[in-house]
Image (cartoon, rainbow, N blue to C red; front, side, top):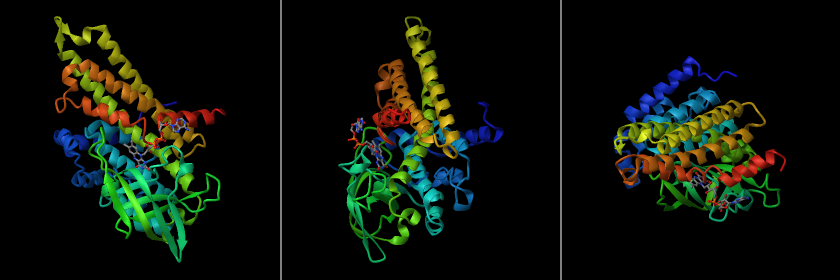
Length: 385
Ligand SMILES: Cc1cc2nc3c(=O)[nH]c(=O)nc-3n(C[C@H](O)[C@H](O)[C@H](O)COP(=O)(O)OP(=O)(O)OC[C@H]3O[C@@H](n4cnc5c(N)ncnc54)[C@H](O)[C@@H]3O)c2cc1C
């Protein structure tokens, strides 16, 4: 096994870190977080490095990167950009909307929708969760019923990342209520300006506050049959799970990048802060916490890289993606808490250090893309349990 990046991957990492640090306005990240501001200007800038579509083939407008290079680029993005909500918004758009359309879309769908999803002009939302259906996709109740040359979609979708500002929604709805759990749902590409499509609420959240998160209502929304993802009914669950598998690696690589940033800030602080006549880094109670943060980071990266290399090729990819997601999210929470403890009282203040924001952001990571409990269910199922 070769654990080294290629020269291209090292250059890619450096380029994206430099771009994020200089172009993505880290100085105002705390203010945007406080005001729940989503920046369309910064969104547009990310197109310079095709951050909305790193793994999408070049001919569709993406960067055409392999899955490991995509993961490395996301890690760099999460490291360089201190606005975790913004990174999350771009990553969710990439892995849960652009990726499934580029992977499963018909030629016509790809030609029509991928350009604006890749070049920073459009924002996408993946609309699966409902007020009555989160972990259990078998409870999805939104329906898509045939009407002439298309479908009428009715239902409420909740917790949609980017929902309140999205131009395009990838909506999952029941097309065959009699079918088994795997075949009940289909995916639809829906223009959010369609008649009957409304944003019913923009939520306020404890973390990732710069990403607009909302509830969407589809009231008899007409969608032409040409917008049925893949052109076939019944593949919704498989396509959604494929998207989640990518998200569990790509988005969580950005969290590993954030963990690297938090580690560096914590080391710097611990070396500088003096108590009882010496830097607090000299207290074993502090240095062991930092050592554990480093171990968690390295283990997260190795699991993510391993899962990444499987994404395009292996039948086992979803197993490895769930292991990587579970470990990285729980490591992210623990390391953010350790950093807060080491910074002491000043870490708890808002706007002084980014650690309180990082901790609020980290806490969501054990929930979205499938909760920790759901990841353990997936891992146990792969083990035949
Ligand atoms: C920041 C954020 C962004 C999100 N973005 C999106 C998005 O873009 N699109 C979208 O469709 N959804 C999105 N979601 C929703 C997310 O996918 C769900 O919150 C998640 O799947 C869990 O569903 P739930 O919240 O309904 O919790 P529930 O499914 O009701 O679970 C509640 C608790 O019960 C546990 N539980 C449930 N079932 C089981 C089981 N079988 N075994 C063991 N424990 C179980 C869960 O692990 C959890 O602890 C987002 C959520 C958050 C927090």
